[in-house]
Image (cartoon, rainbow, N blue to C red):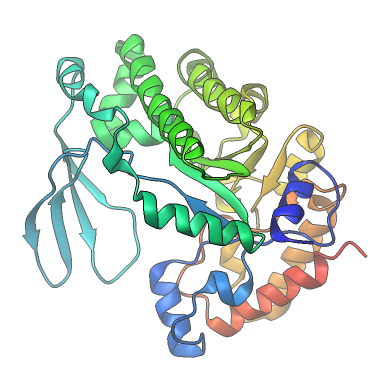
Length: 353
C-alpha cells in the first residue's frame, strides 16, 4: 500500500495493511537526534517513514514584522499579525504573548480587509513542485491551516477573545468566519492551480488540561457554524477533514462529529483524552490520530511504552479508524534510541495480519 492508500483506509474505517504513521518531534528533539545517530541531512519524516506531507500558505494579516529586542536567549518581535511576542532561542515552546495591535471591534474592522486572499500568500512554484513530488511518491497530502479560536486568539489575544465570547458574540462570529473564509479561499485557489490534496489538516486548539476554553453551548453558537462551513467545503472537494485540537476537548467531540470532522488529533493523555474510551464511544463516526503518551517514551524501562502502545493499539486500530501519532509532539527528553524503539513497537503492534 502507498501512504495515501493506507491513510485513506484508516480514515474510511477500513483496516489497511498496518496502522499509518505520523509524528511531530520538536526542533530541539531533532537536533538531539542528529547528535545521537540520525543521519545528517535526513529528517525524522524521511528516516521513520511518516506518511503525511502538508502544504499551505501565509494566513496572517501580513503586517510588517519588527524586531524589538534581540538577546542571546530570546527575541521580542512584533509579528505579521501585529502581536508582540517573545520567542526563546534555545528551547522549543509556544511564543509568550506580550501585546496585541487589535483589541477591539473598531480596530478589527480597520484591519479585517488584510485577511483577504492574495497572490503573495503562497510560494506557488515551490509548493506546487513539492506537492507534485509528494503525489508521485504516494504520500498522503494535506492542506494545512489554522482556523477559529486558535487563529484569532493570535490576532486579538486570548483574553480579549474570551471576554468577547460573553460580551460581543457577533464580533466573535465575524472573527471566526473571517479565519475560515481565508482558508477556504486559499485552498480553492491552490486546487485551481493544480494542487492535489487528500485532506484538510486544520488546527483549532480549544482545550487546556482540565477542559475547554469555553462551553459547548458557546461552541455551538459561535464556532460550530464556521467549522461546519470549512468541513462542508473540503468535503465538496472530495477531501477528508482532520481537526488538531489540543487539551481536554471531550465535551466537544459530539459537536465535532456533527460539524463534519472526520478525524480528531492529537488526544493529549495528560489532559484526560483517552483513545480507548473515545474509540469505544465514537469510533463508528470519528477516526482518531494520536493518544500515545509522550511522557512514557522517555521512561527508562522500555516495557512502559510497549505496554502503552500495545494496549491502546489493540482497541484503537480495530476496524480501521486510527493513525499513530504522539499525544502532542515529541519533546527533547526522548533519545534517538528511545524513539527508534517506539517506531519498532508501532510497526509491531500496528500490523493487521
